[in-house]
Length: 353
Image (cartoon, rainbow, N blue to C red; front, side):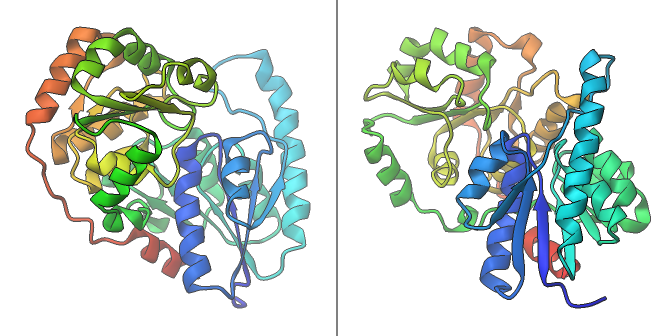
């Protein structure tokens, strides 16, 4: 095959699908500047905002959601996916000596099918411990499948699946306490109490948001709270901001420092957040999303429970009493160090180039 001149990335629907792609993109820009990078996504998805900050070409396609249940919307979305395949086909057709890398989400299915139709090599990365429907379909067309967890190997063909791990952001090993202190100052927060960091993921979590709001006064007695609420809740929660509480729709560069130096982290259990907290050796409190397909967030969280002692509370068991018990227990947990020497970013890029 001719030397790779361009890598076309695709992934979206949640930050968990986009952030590992961005880590790979930044690594490639730094170490392989001769390779052009572009991205295919949904103009209305979170990937549009996140990729616009990367100064690379972004091309949008139409996409539909893949549902495992009967819905009239499925009929409409079939046509959206077909249009997306046609759009992706013509985008990829004009890219010579290129390969495709899909990091998950419904938007990648038309791209994966179009990569097959245009004869391009295509690679996918599965972040979660349970395979998503999009990547299950994409694996049919993939030349190689990379997975984060050993438990995921059983879901893909052995001959083309590699346990690569998760592409961790380089800040994991570089962020310093002073970075964290500067962040708190920029948020105008007091620094006399331990910090509680709460995140419901890039889109926020109504369940976690309500839990914090209902117990805000008691929590503020013990903690300075930093809360990622999601864009749909920012206007409501920003009105509560004061010296003990700061809320934002989304944290970008600040996220690693907040996770590393906060005394307690309460989070949903998306694969990216779980793996990064494991890499930081942070015993956290995970509340897995119950409706996640194949209960994938629960299994992600249990990986952290086994390896670093994180606490897992299922939605059905979540209450104010349970969260305060978990916080007290979390404060007493001894940090465990785990080996993060395996460089997934390096391994993946060496395999695809």
